[in-house]
Length: 393
Image (tube, rainbow, N blue to C red; front, side):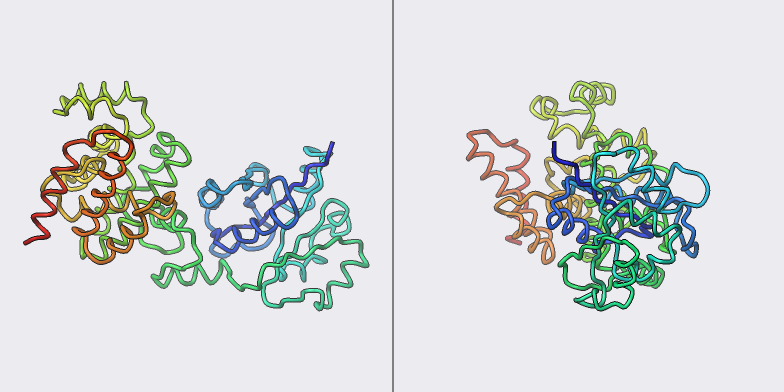
């Protein structure tokens, strides 16, 4: 039986960023690894300045890798007490996986510091180090490389181009009110929700809603909701609408999506929602109407505009307000959406004109449904007719 090849991505992940993901995916492919464990440290011997709470760092890391095949998050270092040293972590992993080859992923700067680690000679017997360049294309020219080899270290070098992205620089940018380009958008949204790294909390109070939403949604749906919230916020800023309202609507728009259809129907009946038979029998359509009721009753949302946007995000409605359109479109174009024929054009139009984007999106939906030999919901056609009248004006 072939030995399993396990990659280990350790670090504070304060916060996790795209270079971490890029490095892991490169190692997964180049070294033919079976999986990579992202392992946020709980109480590192160094790095105490501006270190976010361990649970926040774990959750950000989890959100960043959820939809990445072969990448997983481990709580091994979070659940240990005292100061955490890599030699102890590797010893535990070796006991848990005696028939596996371990590859510890590090940056070029970390390679230069390996001899200062606790019990480095023992560490060298436990794993191979996979080194990612940060500032030079040939890390073997680093004087420490020969010293490490002589001490028994096994090193392989990834072929990713050098990139000097750092969590420290990202934290500085966040504190200055910027949104760093190397942050996954779902991580940026989590940072806003929790008010981490001196970022103003938004939407206010969402940190209290998040644990409940995390329990209510599947992992894929949770990431989708964070991405919709982030996209809706950006569209709201683009069209001079309230970004917090848009963000809250995006965060909760699918709060009923993972409920069984029978549960959704029971809520609709209890709330006496006036809905036609087709909506009541469709999980894809009903969850928006039920979601508005759940957002109000279970999540304490009182803003009628937010509730209205959640309510109509599945079918649209005649007389949609800008916030309604923003949520509807954000749901369709968020970054993780699987490509469909109209996607890029809807994304382009969403940056130019909400009405044009809505019209194009709904027309593509009508076309798709008809090609499937199905009958579109009449509300969709009514909304398109209304948008046509607006466009003509």
